[in-house]
Image 1 (cartoon, rainbow, N blue to C red):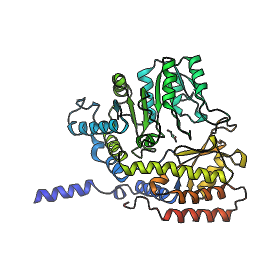
Image 2 (cartoon, helix red, strand yellow):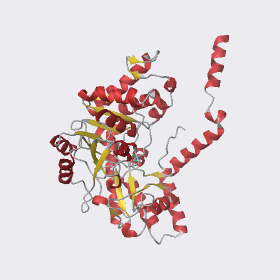
Image 3 (cartoon, rainbow, N blue to C red):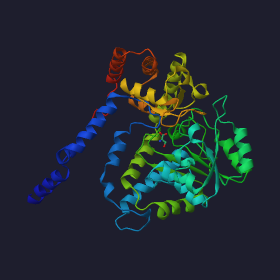
Image 4 (cartoon, rainbow, N blue to C red):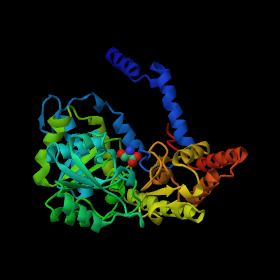
Length: 427
Ligand code: DSN
């Protein structure tokens, strides 16, 4: 009896809520919860992780060191985390039809780094999408590790169509003979033909890496052409359309598995984050459900409806629309820069990010565009009717004639809209 009392007292002390031991930090987290609840989240790379994912990510697995891989660790006591990691691997393999999966990368950028580390020698040549046409920092930006260690060349979007021009990419590949071709983007609103990329890569003896971070949820749901069969390597984050924890994954062909595993550990990382790997396992399980598939379809439908509203209101979209979860608005014709639009929308309770558009004259700190995406609002429950309301608020807020009183009214409209869609009611 005494023992039980002692144990329960210890537990109570151990589980003292954050607010009790660190009110300052708890206050900031509460502020952020309030911000997330009170804004329409249109950042295309964000989402709301499920309660299951949050629970796994905040679990006691954070306490465990597990350098190495299941059944081949450099620490004792790994019998349970071995099962957790194997579960995450098997679920990811089955979700994407993968031959080999490494669930240890801490982020999408570390996943990309590991592929380059495994596949390339310093200075090797790579062909990837330009950052200001929709690529990613880790696809060869000069000040990023990728641009410093490897010789990146860029393909971009066609000036007229705003789309990838596969013939032109093939011409560049033939001229440059890269060792690796990178497909995938952070701000491309159209489907990507990965099979065509694989043909181009094979034609010049290059390997193909697909960075599917933005579209992984759509791929899991079978709503985007598959990158896994044509790609030698596929990297992804797990927190965007996939709605998992903030982290990364590498998928590859079996014959490349040893190189990838060695590149991650001991090449680039030490102990894996077992609590985050557990959260990835939960995310992969949820991503295999009909509910998840329906949500991905709704994400696409919501993006299409928002795109239509913005275009009807006179806003130009790069490539003329969207096939996926995001759109890129070019605001040049309405005389508003990206940073001005981001700030204006923030005032009315809508969060977006300024984004360069192809052939942008403005620097990346200003930009001529904004990127808008629907994964988070769709997880929150928005459907086409709500997207129309969001579209109307955006158009009114970006109008050069919007007065301070109108902006205030628009903020109220956003709040009224959000009130019908509670976020994390258990918190
Ligand atoms: N920074 C991410 C995005 O917003 O698209 C890509 O990693």
